[in-house]
Length: 331
Image 1 (spheres, rainbow, N blue to C red):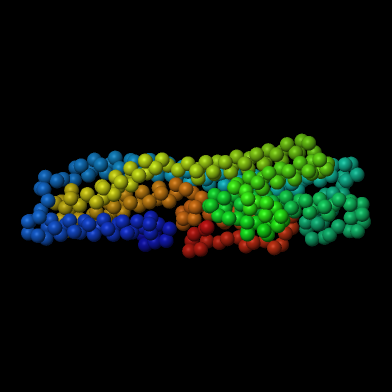
Image 2: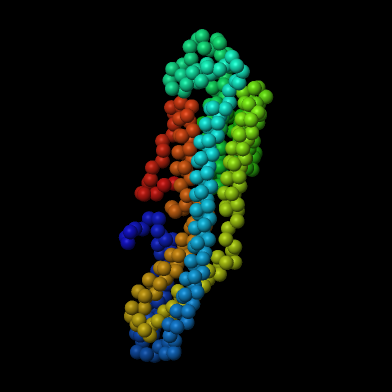
């Protein structure tokens, strides 16, 4: 861990840190290397820096706690998205289907044989004329749920999801999404419309329709929670104040400690600056947990896992590969 570079704050702060240490070396050389001609005021002590350092540490700790709360809330919301997407898939496969008496005892067998490799017999197709259409409907809806998850991930990352959605949605629906400003919500609307069509057709019991609608409502609430985090950053005035205080403290520190630490001043300043710049950088990085920084949430991994989990329930074979860590980092 001591020699780790990738994914650490040092990647983001090394230029500031190098400048601060160079400035500390210049101040030390002027103070100690000029035979006392340019010595700074002898009354300068470390006391004011100790007082300011304690307060600055508290401020940085508070800001980092706030940033981590946002990060952890985002992770909990995506954990809830994993659960609700699996739940609504199970509901689609178990609650959507003809409810007339004459279908009892045959629908389950036909669907089971379809999903696990053995196609329904000709007699089953004749006796159950809507079976193929029902299975196609199940597949369409599960694909649409998976498409929603990918569109949601790209919506949070300000990316265009249309090319990726073409393998899960019909071409005409993808084109309709082109003019939508909130594409995940548009996909949820289509899910709701298709549920209503199935209900009118008699494939969904009225009580089950309420259950499906509740799952759509939960997905909407999860999306709203993530959008709230993304669109409401920590107030700029507070962030700017922390940045300025950290910079001024680290740049001024050599003046206060050069009389005590002498030629070790650049090293001491480097250690202190690494701590403060690093804490400041960590807070910046995890403030928006939905980006592509190395320590942000692995949304691509989560959305791919969700797609695989959902499509396996309907027997799809052309599944994407689950993402693996690259240089110990999930994306």
